[in-house]
Length: 174
Image (cartoon, rainbow, N blue to C red; front, side, top):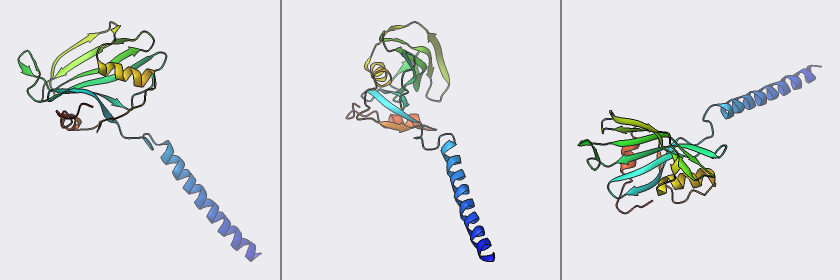
């Protein structure tokens, strides 16, 4: 009887450890962001030594025939002005494309000074034909499932705009 108890205790201990390990692993798998890549910015295009255009990466697949995404123009210092004041960056937080109609609604736009203060904002809710290669590229990624090739990715977080400016080079068209 003592022998059976010894093996029962050992078996229960092993089983308990296995269950605890499985529970810990399951908890990690269910944690928000666990196993997913950190948020990043995808460079879509640039105008040499002037600005580059970025969107969130990965680009989310279209749902119900539309795709909504953020688009940010990052300007090099003292290259773009609005009302004689330098612009740091410009953001469209909810640009929307329609896959079938091949149209875009730019939605809200905010222009920021280099120190982050808002210079102006407006909101255009009208759908118009897609203009420019950046919006076209996001549409192809979101609506058509086009593969992402030759990507320049910048890690999101404090200082991402400064990091993005380092990729606005005269030799890097991507």
